[in-house]
Length: 118
Length: 118
DNA sequence: AAATAGATATTGTGCATCCAATATCGTATG
DNA sequence: CATACGATATTGGATGCACAATATCTATTT
Image (cartoon, rainbow over all chains, first blue to last red; front, side, top):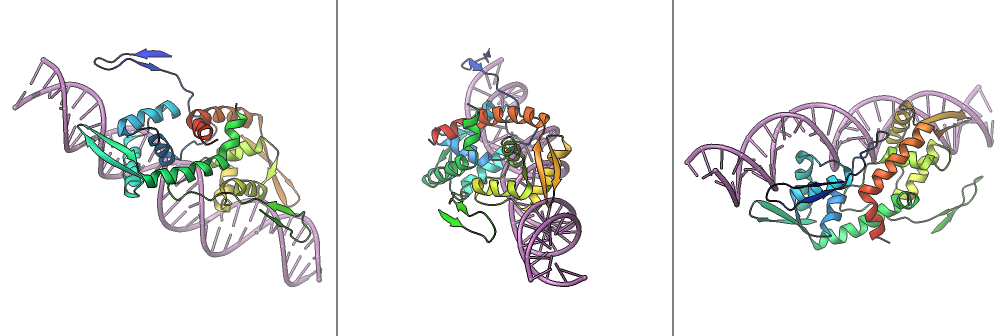
């Protein structure tokens, strides 16, 4: 754990998180995770990338992230609005509906793995 | 919930499980899930497919499943042995080591989603 | 021996996700 | 105005996971 203080930014505590395993590929579920994050609060792209890095130890590549956001918006699950430099993304009612079903499916498929590890 | 009785087979209770959501793609983590299943008991291919169907409502296609099993074996994470018609897969010590790390990573990335939904 | 059934396995195609590298856009600073 | 910086965005290429369709292999049944 370390404290990172960039000039003109709020100092931030960085917590080491465990790295992706060597044994098996852990890709997938990016749009699911983004939708889940946006149920908490509206966020802009780079903020979403940081949040994902906290969980998966690595930021998604811009070439991965932005097309995914565009696609979610096209489906009407999120909507965006410019605020200065940043483009904020916010979950829509359809998105909330969707993530409820997706979470249920996710728990059915993987829930026991989480419970086993605690 | 329904009871399915095939001729010459033990009657089996089929529990309806929720379908894949429309909102976002839920692919991925197949080798992770297989490795997790094999920590419980040794299984043959078709058995693994059934177990996955219980969780994800759909059997993985043979063209998905068997190459994945072959790859896991090539990496030394599982090993196989013929028993009559069936080919049983069993997790190796390296596989057990790997799945421990993978589970930890998985919980870090997605654990809160499961806990939020309960 | 032939037919059937269950299990294993391959081929070819499509898509989401991942990367590295690069470009652009908006805002603040010198 | 020029520079720098943070954020947004695209391009091109690789890989894993998904499908449909088909083939093979083993054991059982007729």
